[in-house]
Figure 1 (cartoon, rainbow, N blue to C red):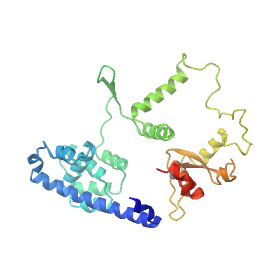
Figure 2 (figure 1 turned 90 degrees about the horizontal axis):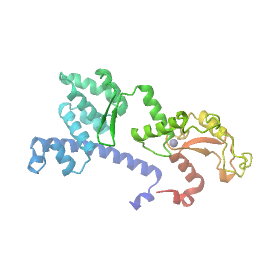
Figure 3 (figure 1 turned 45 degrees about the vertical axis):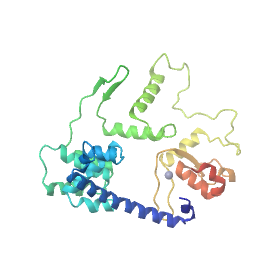
Figure 4 (figure 1 turned 60 degrees about the vertical axis):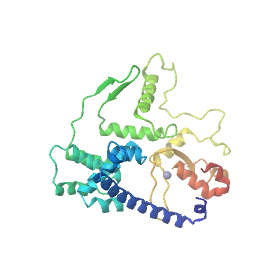
Length: 310
Ligand SMILES: [Zn+2]
């Protein structure tokens, strides 16, 4: 792939777009092939127990990918409009599969026209938006909390989270992304339980310690007014966070698209610290790791930054 380094930025972006479009075309093509393999029952001839087994073990897809492809194929078979939507990207494989599972779960089969209407309503939607729309058509009653032992050491817990809790989880995940970019719910709950116990458990509560919610003052040996110190006072960090609303402030000059990521955020000096940029509210901003690095590359060039690039 060394030839890629010779491409200009616009050539690279162009080719990437072309590849995405080819990938979508190929995916639709693959679904039709799976359909024909199923129709001829070739998977059985090849020694697999089902089409799913063939796609998973025979073609090497993981379980989730195999399921997405097979469900999308079934939807494609029923609704011809699925093909152009998959090819132009208005319907993702994941939404196609969610739609097919939804139709399958329904007690009373929908007519083709009905299915088409549901399809039209999820076009261009994210996976979560698609789930929300499908749930609005047939809301499931929240299930009662349940816990059951699955082994001598592990318990499965099931409960239904409301929107407020899910938003809090998303915010927590973003704030924790430096430590763990993709925590499981078990990891999140462990962390939350530890934090809560530290505050509430009298055996763990530190005696006479200052309230954590008050912004920490800089340690005595670090003088925030010292221009040579890289230390950014906590209160200033909070002010930057608040002004930038806790998300990456990078804006593309051409498209005016703001990144807005809440993951792996760092405090960034607009005028670089090594070039005399100061710790002031005006010179500091929030950037995700990708955009911090992007700006560093523009400032220092890829030669200096090569050790940070993978
Ligand atoms: Zn960003």
